[in-house]
Length: 400
Image (cartoon, rainbow, N blue to C red):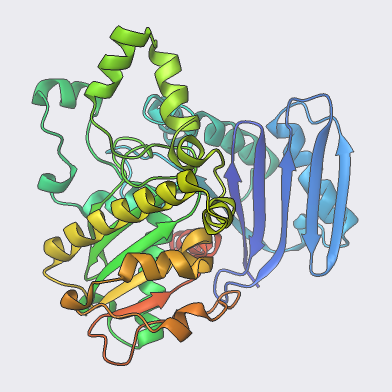
């Protein structure tokens, strides 16, 4: 059985999963965190068995060594697991990468260079790539880019109306993110409905701590809410989403906010946290239900922004066949789904209150639209790791 090791790395941690790419079955998973701190943590799960250990992990290379050790301690060492490839999630592929790509020295170097567009993500991905290639030198490594799915957007959707020479020199355009999730969910929705992906107009709402929406026509992204960075678009856990750019000039001139202060404000102190004091939507909802006016306003602003994009994408697509909710908030918050769909019967969107209120399963899609709804409304659990494994296997398996 061929197995894919999927890596999702941050600057001081990385998550991993060992996946059968054909069935999507998770064979093992884990987390290596607090890399570079005096004491790091390794958590490994294999079936029902869970291992956890605290020890120094000075860098990502040491982290991969500890990951291998965790596999050995669990009784399932990686070297005996028929590892076919390592698939790496990479946030920013710029204009360079349109599809899963086998990583060589040139590709790895370009991923690092693209860190100028994603400074919180690509350098960390590069660290993990270097460490993983040293740890597993005899298997192919594949980069799967969050931005790749959105490379099908037309120029009218991805172009910002600024000086074209400045935009070209600095790579300024809408790239979009969460592409792996949007691609997985739209394909999963088509299979669930037993309809050809190429015939469907879909809108996917990826609503979590990070949130984005995507208009998908025949399996191709034609518009998305995130832009040059993941800051644009919807209200998120700590990110502002859309705002008038002149707010930045105003705060710089009147309050002496420098670039770093503005960055922290919009990426870390805004969104739900800025409006309601917490970035967890569950806590915001509980506070609103208890009568907290600020929490209710945060929900209202969040809902308004989602409906704004939903209306725009209905116009872009000329209507929709499927609207799918996914990610932590989208999958688990029935009240938000109801708020988003309220009053949209004119567009053929009618939610069934009982179906919407039912608990979601761990991995199976479910229908929440009313029988007379012209648009299928679904809750589709996302699985970005399985999609990365599938795309990685699609590239390396074909070469076998």
